Picture 1: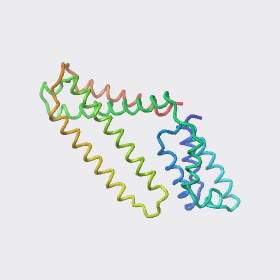
Picture 2: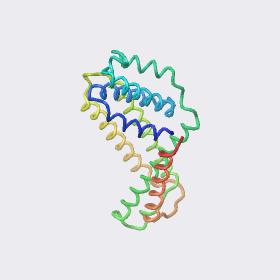
Picture 3: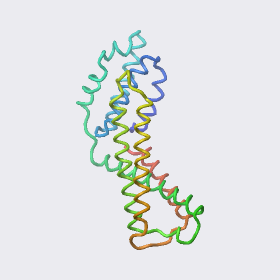
Picture 4: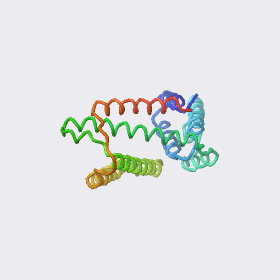
Length: 221
C-alpha cells in the first residue's frame, strides 16, 4: 500500500479505539506526522503497526498507557530516531504537488476576479510580475506549513495547550502573509513582457492543475 492508502486504513481503524486510547494515539500520530523530513511511507507503516498493536492490546483490556508507556513524547522520539529520512525524489514530488496546487488556485482566483474588474487590460499577464508573485506565495505557504506543523508538534502532548491560541497564531500568520502578498502585488504589477490570457482559459488551466495535483497526492508512492 502507498502512503495514501495507509492513511485511509488508519482513519478507519481509529474508529475502533475508545476515547482515552484514541486521544493518546492521535497525539502520537500528529507528533510523528508533523516531522516533515521523515519518510512518509515508513512513518505511515509504523503508525499503522502501532495502531494494530493497540487494538490487539485493548482487546485484552489494556490501555494505551499500559502498552506504550506514560511518556508518549519520549516513545514517539524513540520511534522517530529509527525512521529514515524522506528521499529527494519523494521530496521533489511533494513540493511539486504543492506548487501545482497553488498555481491552479491562483489561476482560478484570477478567472473569478477578471469578470468583476472588467476591461481588456485585466486579461493581460505580466510574465515577470506573475512569476515573482507565484514564488512569493509558495515561500509564504512553505513557511506557513512549517509554522502550523511546528505548533501542532509542540502542543501534541501538552494537556494545557489551547486550540484557540494555536488558531489565533495561525490566523495572525495568515493575515500577515496576505498583507505581504497584497503589498507586493500593488507595487510590482507591471513588470516584464505581456500576453493575453482570457479568464475562461485561466479557469480551465487552473482546474486542470488542481486535478493533476490531486492525482499526484493520491497515487504517489
